Structure formats: C-alpha cells, structure tokens
Amino acid sequence: MSQNPPAERLAKRLEGVSESATLKLNATVQAMKAQGLPVVNLTAGEPDFAVPAEGKRAAIAAIEADKSKYTPASGIAELRERIAARTNGQQPAVSPPWKASDVIVTNGGKQAIFNALMALVDPGDEVLIPAPYWLSYPEMAKLCGGVPRILPTRFEDGFKLKPTDLEAALTERSRILFVNSPSNPTGAMYSQAELKALGDVLLKHPRGGRVWVISDEIYDLITFGEPPFCSFLQAAPALRSRTVTVNGMSKSAAMTGWRVGWSVAPANVTAAMSTLQGQSTSGINSVAQWASVAALDLPPGSFTQQVDSYRRRRDLVLEILARDPTIKVVAPQGAFYIFAGVEAHFHDGEDSIAFAQRLLEQAQVAVVPGTPFGAPGFLRLSFATEEGALREGCRRLVEYLATGARRE
Ligand code: PLP
Image (tube, rainbow, N blue to C red; front, side, top):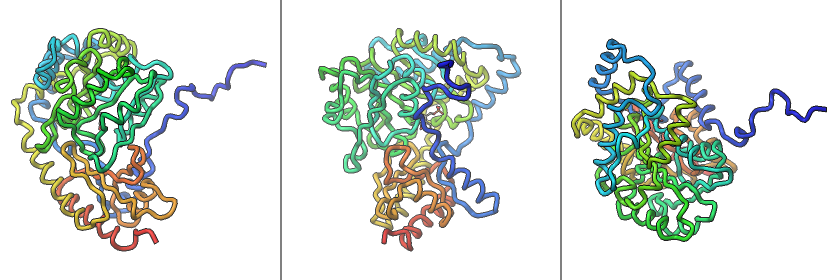
C-alpha cells in the first residue's frame, strides 16, 4: 500500500490557519441589503476618501507612456528613493540613513509583513503579538512555520504592551515582536518613551538578542495629536539592524485597491525578501508604482483635511457611545476605529461574533467582532464612514444595548 496522502489532502502548512471570521457577517450584510433593508455598515477597513488627483493623473500618464513592462522585483528606483526619504524623515536618529536599496515595494503592507516573516522565522520560532492585534499577524506567523505567542494588554493600560510583560514573555525561541502604532483595532499609539522602553528590553534582556521587530506603521498619517506619531526606530535607533519597518499607500493615500506597500530593512534581510518576492510575485503593478511616486511627492499637509474629518467623526462616535456608561471605550489616538467593550451585554455562551450577528439581524448595524483581533468582549466600529451613517449606526447600537440586549 502506498504511504502517499490522498490527492485531496491539502498541505499541512494550511492546517490551523483561520479564514476570515467576518465572512458570515459580510454574507448577512449583503443578503440584508439585497432585501432592501437599511443596514448601516461600520465594518470598513479602508478610507472612504478618493485617491489624490495627482496619483490618478500619474497612473493615466504611465499607461499612456507605456510604462507597462515588468519592473525590478523590488520596485522602480524612483519610488524606492522616495520611500527611503520618507522613512528617513520619520527616523532622523537612525544611522546610517536608509537608501533606496534598503526598500522593497510590495503588494500592500500585507506582503511586506509576510516577506519579513518568511525571511526571519524558522519552524518553532515564537512570534510575539500584543493583543488586541491586527487579525492577520497570527495567521501569517503560522503560515511561515512560527508559533504565535499572544501577549495580552490591558484596557486600563490603553491596550499598550508594558515592558515588564515583554520581559516575562521572552524565551530562547522568541524571534519576532510585532509593534503596530497606531493600532488596528484599538487606535492606541505608543509615545516615543514607551517605544524606547520596549526597545530597551530587546537590547538589554539576555533573551532579547535574537528578536527582530516588525513595526507596522501603516496608519502613521492618521493621528489626532497626542501622542504625536513616532516611528519605532526613531525611539530605538540601536535596533536598526533588527527592525523591519512596514508602511504603504493604502491608508495614508486611500489607495487600498492599488496594492502598494513597502518594507525598509537592513541589507541582509532586504536581499532575502527580494529573492523571495522575485521568485513568487515579482515586482508589483507598474502603473500603481508611478501613481505612488506622484502621491508621495504631494506636499506635507495634503491630508490635513482628511485627518480633521476623521477626528470629527471620532469625536462624534465617542460622544454617542458615552451615553451608555456600560460601554468600555479607550479614545483612539490614531487610525479610524473605535474598539468598544460590550461584554456586559452578551448572553450566556455568547462571544462577540454571535453578538455582532445578533446586532446585525436585530438592529441592522454591521460591526466587526473583536474575537479575531484577540479581544472577544469587544466590537470594532470603523469611522471611515460618512457622518450621517455613523451617527445612525452608533445611535442604534446604544439603543439596542439599552433595550433588551442586556444579560438576564
Ligand atoms: N497592517 C494593518 C494594521 C492593517 O490594518 C492593514 C490593513 O487593513 C494592513 C497592515 C495591510 O494593508 P495593505 O496590505 O492594504 O497595505
């Protein structure tokens, strides 16, 4: 008898990797909309603004100029130069400064994270992920053979990882620490001093020496004042040789569908990630790269109006949710999400996925449950939504919680 597995069995690396937990919810939203029901959708993970006109024009010009051939796997030089300059602007303490050759343009920030994990994680290596986390981190870590180690943070600490908790979590298998400031889903931001304190742990702790940081800074331009945005390496420049900074155009320039992200990393890891990308996806769409060059040439302050609009919407949501003191909320300092704790309203045996389904069916408000973000008592409300819908959705949520959703 052959020992070969049956043809239909999938590769082991996919075992235990979750599909999106929000698929069922989205299917219900679509079915309800098809029936003409007035669903308010607060699930958006992307800006509701248009791509800057300069970016659109540059894309059209690139098509007409036949800039349509394969690009270098790591991206066109013009774009990599601008990304290096942008990163150096946020990390003036880093020495030597980054060069275009330290940058890889990727298919969204997502691919940059995946490349970094593929390049750095060996089977059994631990990937330290402060919770609540962006839901792809643990799944990507597993796909790359790593072991996600979830580090819970506290609501009372503003959902930020404490240096003492990082110290306690380090083992000889620790390999990656994820930092995501501003955070999806909580909107929490680390100050420069807080980032430095985390960096110091990795520099001084006996088991910190083989740990790399993946600093996901995709929401860097969407911040509301305090603390100001601080790039991880600006706070911990001594970790230059062990940090991959990830960013992209999706959130800052409302270009989610164009799929432009990047990594900035030391030469040895950039070389490995470039080989990986060259043998898998190659360089990203050439037209999107030229559009990104134009968008990165926009003067600073070009997105101030958008940020002001996010701030107004954030304040609106906070004001409406404050009407119900049972809802636990930390005011977000960046990104465009409010993470609301509503566990007091769960029925027995319910978690946020079941609650979100019930909220959708009964109050016709769609939100993302906190469970796949590692926070089962919470809901994520996006305020990348126009004010009328936002006001109505939050009003319905508060009303629903007040009338009947409470635990018996
Ligand atoms: N990181 C975080 C925290 C995100 O929220 C997202 C998108 O939702 C990404 C990375 C990836 O974005 P993209 O691949 O569109 O650049």
